[in-house]
Amino acid sequence: MERRSFVMALAGLGMAQSGADALVEASPSEAGPEISKHLYGHFIEHLGTVIHDGVWVGPDSKIPNAGGIRKQFIDDMKRISAPNLRWPGGCFADGYHWRDGIGRKRPRTYNYWQHSMPAGLDHTETNQFGIHEFMRACRLIGAEPYVAANVGSGSPREFHDWVSYCNAPAGTVSLADERAANGDKEPFGVSWWGVGNESWGCGGDMKPAEYAALYRRFVTQFPVYPPKPRLVATGPRGHSRDMDLGWTTGFFEAMREHRSPVNGFSLHYYTDFRNGRGRAPAFDAAGWYAVIREGMRTADVIAKHWEVMSRFDPRHRTKLVVDEWGVWYSPGDEIAPRAILSQPLTLRDALHTAVTFDAFQRHADKVAMACVAQTVNCIHSLFLADGGKWVRTPVYSVFEMYRPHMGARSVPLRIRADEIAVPADGGSARMAGLSGSASMIGKRLTVTLTNPSLDVGKKARVRVAGGAIAEGRGRVLTHENMQARNSFERPNEVQLAPVRVDLREGDAEVVIPRQAVVALELRIS
Image (cartoon, rainbow, N blue to C red):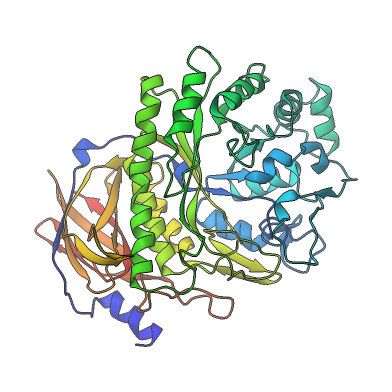
């Protein structure tokens, strides 16, 4: 079926309503915590072409830009109300010295994390994009800055000086005057500070107690300029085959007798399909289901680490910060030689994004922030860029679909639908035939539902406990080809389409196509 006719069929529901029916019941009277806008956050790092080409093109570029920052990046991030931006890493953070990125004369430095560059391409970091440029990007987007500090090769003094440079009012200390001389008189007002990154690995190869001792040194004399700091400690590796609860236990055990604040605990959770387990653009049915099933495990990972944290912090003063997440495939499909870790993402990755967001929302009381890794040209990206070429991946559409959840209260969603049997490595497996989450703000109920089946659509009846649905509309993201993706040549191959919502006896009925995500906005009477 041609793409145009397929979208038209979806808009009118002119497709076979096959598959088991599902009953979806939302309970607004049991609404839980607010879903923080920061669950839909972002991450950019000096790695490959994430910064240089993806975000930063330079003020003299022919590519439309705002002071050197790619204008298309700004516009598309504003469109989805991007709430935060994490920088400068990642592994790069623990080798980054912030003074290299200020002033007019900036040194060219060595970037170790470009070591996988193809032969003939160097490891040079130009430092054209520093703290002032990062803050300009945040302001233009309307995003809150989240800065990762250097613990692996830095010092507490370097960290504290950076905080003062960013947040001290002009005229108070020399660092604030230096910031003003470099073009920003007003303080940056950075609240989120990551104290290192992956200190168990690329950030220093430490043991939990070793890192905890360093953490205390870095935060004990934290400058008290406003805003109130939100300090994020390095948490565990969280690849789908290794939750590393030992790091979580070890860190909090080492902090037990100390008073240093830990506002956030970083958790990195990748659906890891490297080492020959899978490629981004080409896969079979087993590969489709494997990725989505691992995405569904996000809820279990959150719950298990939270259980450990609760033993040491029963008052829950520390929240989880999932500041790196996404699907990570085997290399070999990069969009350009310099764009290391870039991946041509497909419809499969969009559904993975949806089930991950559902997990965050169902655990909104536990997760304070999440940042997709990474926003452009790296792993689970919303965008791919190469010179003047730019495209939104299917992942971007899911961020757009879930935007109404921001700031709403999480609503329990009970889904009655048959499980499905799916092919898996070495046999078969079972998984939820329909998953989702819901939220409420005022009279607006947002329900997002994912049908992972490659075979059948589902007719779902959506009901509100103790209420009635007076009005409804919806959008769907799907394609007839499970490997469909957007490319520079075909940027709109996978795109959002309207889906029909029928109201019957106070309920809403919708057909969710196979391999699809649906977002419903319902007005409750």
